[in-house]
Length: 392
Ligand code: FAD
Image (cartoon, rainbow, N blue to C red; front, side, top):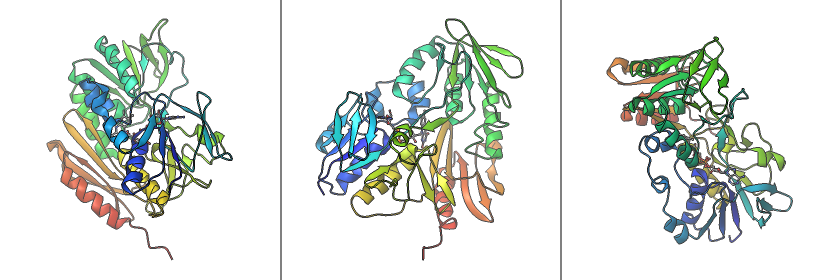
């Protein structure tokens, strides 16, 4: 096969796709277009080590520049794709150039969800998704002593942990009744709430932001309970939404995520979508999933590469994920949100334990704290107990 493969987006999924294509013997041209000015890099450290110990962006690169050169993968950075011309089998770049493709792979990831509230665009209000966000955020943090974080999801809590480690005042505002509600169960949430409070975080649950105060820059936040909190810096960490606009504008089906099948194919011939921006059907979990994790970016990219190489293998993973907060590593496997029973394994006060989540008696998820073995075992057991019945 010698056709040209064009990839939109130069993140984790794009990098894996290109590497897997070459590993599988693909000899055609591979051209990746990325809007950021960096070669494909790891995002997880942005809210963890890279924030705590800023270093040159190179430390985050998934592969050195020489790898892409040696593999003959062309990556054009700072080059956003402006439109997908599916009838013409080409993409149109921001600078007006058109690039033909044989196969198109959309790997555009997500962007930070913003809140339509007064003051949200003021200087002093940040989010963290990209290297350049951290490059702006870090010096602002250095000059700040009172930090308000909007959102008690894993990114907000990771940043809170780094900031408490530096002795800054941290308040976390969470609209839900518990932290990390989207990704974990009640036992884990209450464990992390206790950990953060013990380390001095002012954690406010069931509280909503109604606006940011300030004239020239953010000086505080207004809350729905009528209080106003002073802040030198506000971090908005309220989740992400799929970058599916380009695809939707080109006529591809999208519902906060480009709809693909289990081989990463959209409804249009020779057009695939992978990673955070794609929503795929899972027989294992009985619904469509859009996952935001490294596991998914890597494994779905491998499935797409196999499809392109003519060796299709249905993608239906046991997802897994991790979060580092203080000296605690939390590892999650499976999806817990439809559980009807949860059981603590071990002793939560000892700081090493796990939680098994079941539905109809089957293990659907395991969350582990400082227990890599429980995590690895959990992945294997969930795979066995949720395996879909063979087709036909
Ligand atoms: P991305 O890596 O986001 O790459 C998409 C790229 O496409 C971006 O560079 C974007 O600029 C580019 N792009 C978008 N539109 C265009 C366009 N029109 N033209 C050209 N380029 C375009 N996952 C974990 O498993 N564990 C963690 O601990 C963890 N921590 C995280 C912490 C942070 C702060 C963040 C932001 C994410 C974290 N994740 C974590 C999630 C993980 O990083 C993502 O799931 C993964 O990066 C997804 O890969 P992707 O290739 O789909 O998207």
